[in-house]
Length: 389
Length: 124
Image (tube, rainbow over all chains, first blue to last red; front, side, top):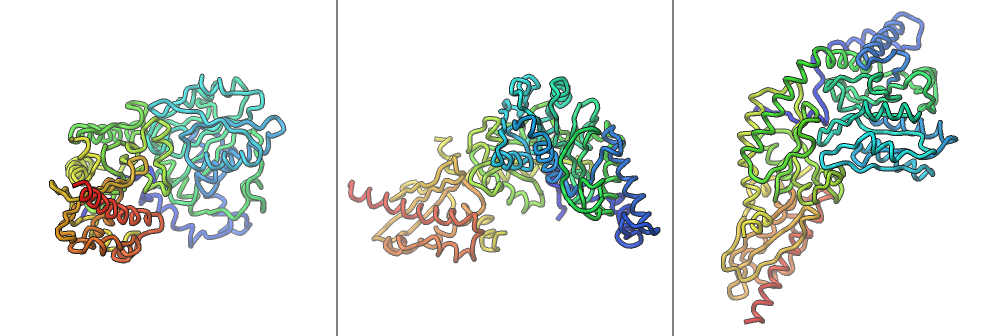
């Protein structure tokens, strides 16, 4: 069976080019980047090339890039590091209700440590405004953390406006840009961000490696205490092969970005249109225009997300859902509840996330298969029966 | 994460549908939690001669409904009332811990249908 992978917001396949670039760093250039002999020097050189590639793609300086083990670690470092370094000034943090758990659970942890957190509500599309953030500012606010784009519903936040306001008001601004890299132009100057998190496996790089951009001059507590790696701020022998993979993946992801965005968003729009036209009582979640190029998120009434995923999987299609059964808790996705969906509609959500590898044929196949799956499950549903009565 | 048997009952659910002149109908769960099970039973001479279900819910909810209907069909009401969630789970070769509540719903749905039948009998 031809497998159709449409869960690229969860993770992507490592591209062949990235893999080939990484392989020599497991064997031939296995050295410790801190060593003086030549295999160590090779590793060091590769590390600094990757740092430059990440910096270039963000319009940052190489000295502002710190390698981490991924998006969650970068979020943890940015938020805890800023909170602890600036708690003398205040203990208030502003974020939104629809952040990734790496941000939300870090904020909840800090609340237990005596910090206060404002979780801003979002509108029906998942948007916050700069004015809303500004209104939440207090004299003791030390940090604003707002994602660049939402992983579930794909909504793209007005980061540059929020950043400009934060800069004027002299409050540190962090953005979780894990979903944004390779999906839009990311410019730390234009965005006025002080910290930015990213993760390689979201744009065809390897898992377990990411980076945190920290603007020169921004004070953060160090994250891992140990050796002198990452200038002593994030100790531990570097994951050289992974970092090389990150560097190559981000270089490729930002190459021909406008053409890539155009191609993927056209496929996205075809899929959205196909679903809305072929299936009754479906709603699109997220913003119709301010949307990640690869994100399709719909709620299909009267049926439950996991059941749809299992049926799709039987048909060779990989997708995801925000239903309780897939979130591992009793509640459906916090993002879908925050945009105002009732529980039973949130349980019926389905997310397809496309990548540059997605083809028109794959999108057409989903549009062909999905209506039948929905029909079968609806015929089994007592909710659908009640609606018909 | 699911056993072969769960996937089989999810993909080919037995006894899906409604019974137009059911002797008893039971509905448990709620949409907010993401699971609703509705069971229809036909009772003749104290025996469940036919049973149908409709379920809104995940794969485990549909599979446990399907298995529970198979387990009570042809049984006396007393035997059917003895059906436990554990028996449904065992018959499906187990469920992931987060899905145990689905088997509880299946047990409750069967019981609710039988109670509805008993109530209808008394009403007559």
